[in-house]
Amino acid sequence: MTPARKGRTMADVARLAGVSPMTVSRAFKADSSVSQATRGAILKAADDLGYVFDSTASNLRSQRTDFVAVTIPSINNADFADTVRGLSDGLKPRGLQILLGMTDYDIAEEERLIAQLLRRRPEAIVVTGGHHSPRARRMLENAGIPVIETWDLPDSPIGHVVGFSNAATVRGMVDHLVAQGLTRIAFIGGDAIRDTRGADRRAGFVAAMQVRGLDATRLIAAGPPPVSARAGAQAMAGLLDRLPDTQAVICVSDLSAFGALTECRRRSVPVPGRISIAGFGDDEIAGVSVPTLTTINPLAREIGEQAAALILDVLDGKQALPARIEMRPVLTIRQSSR
Image 1 (cartoon, rainbow, N blue to C red):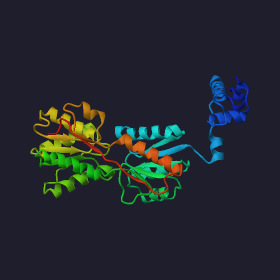
Image 2: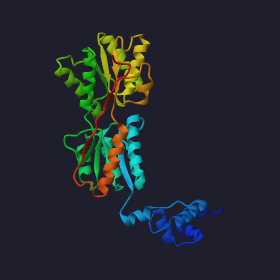
Image 3: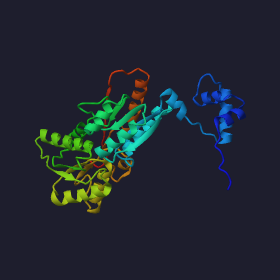
Image 4: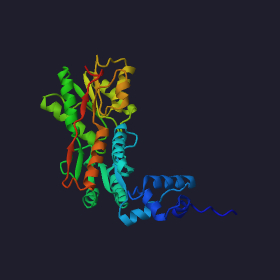
C-alpha cells in the first residue's frame, strides 16, 4: 500500500522561499514588518506547493477567530441574501468572514443556532429580527461580544440595532392605495407566529385601516413562511371567491404578490384596472413582472452594510454605546397600483 502523502508545512514554504517559518506566518497575517517583495515570494512558494495557511493556532494565541456569526430566516430569500452580501462586503477588507446559520423562521431553531455559534466565539453576532426565545435572549445578553439585531426596531433591544418598523412601512402602502381612491383593501400574509416581521406588517395594515375608519378584516392566510408564489396565487383565488368586491391587496412579500398577480391573469382580472396589487421587498421579479409590481424596498443590502460598519466601529473602540440605526424603506410605485 502506498503511504499517504504528508501535507505541506510552513517549513516547506519557508525553505522554498528562503525565509524563516516565522516570516511565513507574518506574511500570511499581512504583518507590516514583511516587505511586499518578500510576501510575494512567500505566497508564490505556497501556491507552488499547494500550501494553505492554518490560522487555528495563531487565532488561539491571539484570542481572535476572525469571523462574524449571522442568523437569517431563509437562504432562498433575495432580501436576506442581499443583507448578507452587504455585510460580507463590508467586513471583507478587514479579513472578517461570515459563519451563516438559517433559522427557517423558527425561534427554537434560532436558539439552537445561537448556542452553537457562540461556542465558536465569533467577533460579533448579527441576528434577524428582535423576537427571540427567553434563553436565546439571555445568551445574547451575556455573550460578551457585539450583538446586532437587524430588520426590526425592537422595543427592548439587546445591543445594537440596524432596522426599520415593518408596521410603519405597510401603513405607508395603505396611504398610497387610499390616495388612489381604494378603500376595500385586503392583506395576504403567512403564519404570523413564525414570521414575526410579517405579523408586524399585518398589524401595520390593520392599524392603518382602522385609523381611517375602513374595514380591516380582509386578512387572508397564505401558509407557512416564506410564502411561495403558489401560496400567493391560492390566497388570491380565495380572496376573489369570497370577497370579489376587493379593490386592492397588499401581500407580505413580492413572491406572494407575483403569485396573486398570476392568479388574476389566469382569471382575466385586470390589474390594476379591476384590482391593485402590492408587495414587499423590491425583488427582481417585481421589476420584470407584467404589470410591474408596486412594492416596498427595505434597503436590504444597506442594512448589511450598516451592520458591517457598526461592527468595525465597535471592534475599533469607536462605538461604545448601543447604536440604533433606523433605515427608511422606500415605497416604489409601479404599474400594478393605480
